[in-house]
Image 1 (cartoon, chains in turn orange, red):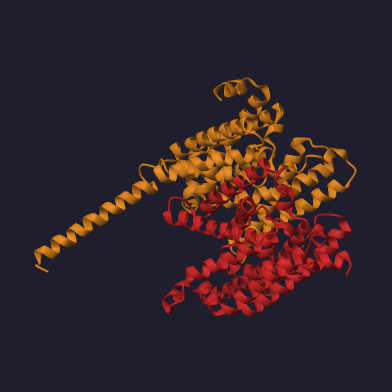
Image 2: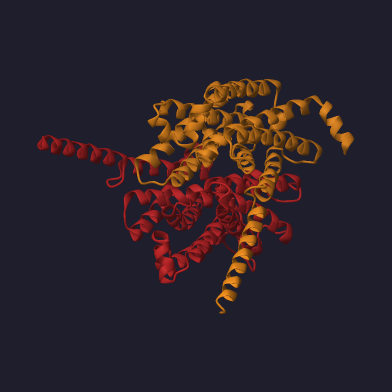
Length: 309
Length: 302
């Protein structure tokens, strides 16, 4: 087993894929912190599903599987979907989650229509286009990892430069506006970061599971600290570790897809944090609750004695 | 009966069966919980298959439905801990179950007659070829018979518990005060949702089911204020959307369920824009009118 792992780390393909998924986990864990704080974590789910028609249309236009072209298509259709969701939930009595589910399924349906249409056409390059639905981390190339690294660095620089502003708007956007910060600009910057992170994850983790990468790390990290300065890097670290260990598991095991195994590792982090966090964990809370009950019973009994029943 | 008529018929039955519980999901604002259910029943289907070894077994449907109910319970429990946001709870639970299902399917894909693509995307085009025979007599396409039964169950539930559903949906606190149990009705509804999702997975696929559930209900919600009218409109839209969708899918030679989902989305967006009561245009007209009135009032005062 151990030999297998050391051998694995020397393997070139593995190094590329692990680096890619690790970066991806780091990025989405850190950026996802803003999404969960803003209570918009499911928006990521809708967004990733809505990217599918963009990928199909991008392929129809450029007639090749050139990643950048497909990702631009995905970004555009993701942004259109977000705009429709915001419009529906803000300008009418439609609830946010209804708008989410409607847009998610219609766009995904459109994606399927385009994909099945392409599959009927004679262009031989289309094979493997549907790997975007489940993701195919093992197909990652050096240039993909480079793309993730470049965009990731830009996003992290933005986070450092606008740290104060992002923090303010993640917690209390109204207060931010009253202080005179430009709400529209900051909100646009934040959602663009989230969209880009999701799009980068599409190829390796797939449309359906990429939102888990966004939500899981921050939920786990949130249990260990109340400070954004701790939660955000911790979420990044959890994402990074999950990305790499998921890749290791899928490389060692027989026929285990990478995306799902990353999600399973991530979920173990989440469950562990929810149970065992020293301050707010479920186990600590339960024991505090029991103690309080005991104390209360004691007080009642002593009162009973005092008043002679 | 030609193939296309039979496909249309199956599509209509599937759509109406899905749309009926969807009415209450839209009104309650729990559609994303149903999205989670439609993903996790996949794990139920796989696990139940390991036990029954038969994709056509009724126990498979029961087992998978139970997984849906378990999902609802897990999400609710997480939400009650207040350790994470309500939406994050949904986003944590379903990817885990779904991932386990995908891993199991990929690992044992040789042994199971289940592959990712059909389970997730479904294929209505093949539905008429999977026949159901009882004592050697062909009684129709399997998808049609299964979904017809599920549709009847849904209709039965909604008519029997109409009053309870109505009162718990619009005012849960009042319902609890008068002696109805909102929790029981909620779980009943969610059981139906997961039963329907299980029944629909091989024709529609587990991702699009949520669109079939939410779309027609949301369209009807935008057009009326009355529950009974809303249910009627929902059934109507479900049927019309799927008839148009099947025709278009044949014209473009593409995924049928996908096309129905697209038509559903477009129809709903049209209702959202043009609805005479709650539509986008009407709303902005109303706002302008109010602004004008307000301006005139202000002018009068000065």
